Image 1 (cartoon, helix red, strand yellow):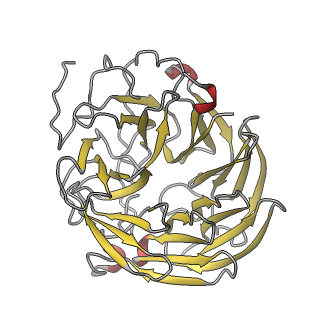
Image 2: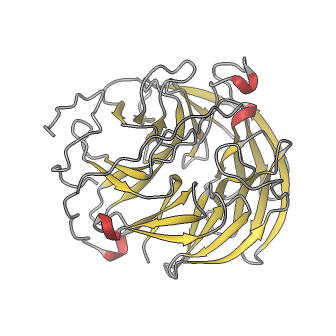
Length: 396
């Protein structure tokens, strides 16, 4: 494979393995799509030795086509980087709470209930049934059960979006100290993602099929619903012009990319919005912040988005759209979500989970280096099970 010289606006994903390691579908009715064959990643060079064990980060990913999650150490060689923990049927959202002593508890929204994990021991310690249990068990984008999940900054609560069946969906509130549910509140339709305030004062669901974000007051559990529909609501459930996932800024505002054309900045308290332009032109799914840079997974040409699968890196601190404020890395197949992963030497990477909800992704994680937009390093790591949601957390 010969090297490719990328431009600043569009960077080829298929970078040769000789480069140094630099390291959800939306139509209302399921459309049968034959899963693409998972690629066999090229052999990567051995990663550099970690300079500080205290700085190491790991990744936790739900494996949507299995009953497990993957704990991933990207600093290890491929054959040693992934271990599995059984959690329950068809896991979706994941989150981690890390204590002052460095120990971490994992939480997983499965189709059956909320799984609680001892990440150091690599085992599930509890599977707590939902207050609104799924009417059936299944897999895929339309299966009932737990969807988005977020952990409060102090680890005291876990917020899980639950879709019991064809009716209402809910945010259920789990108290980590008592290992019991505190209550719940109705939210919009198919809440793909759950977000939480930096100060823990609210949680919010991104209600994919309602064109809404529902904000839950952490103290009273009262809800406020805000419409987020920059392209209108025409088409209803059949529309592609909807939000899927969001990212919370340090100031408490929510960033919601839509169609790779606009990023809506929502004030969750007042409902006020402003728009940030984007030229990614790819149906937007998972998103995460790296400082002021918003990383967004584009899944390709759906609705008004006409481009190919890509990863957009958009500096939200720069209103003007340019080759400096936004660039895209094409992705060989659709992916679903993304997390920021930092290597022990401080290098930053977008860890992009390949398990796209429309069965068009692949069974792996793509790591894209964020240091040099003109020539990002890229690594593909095979992770069987179809990784869907992904978060980073400190290594013990």
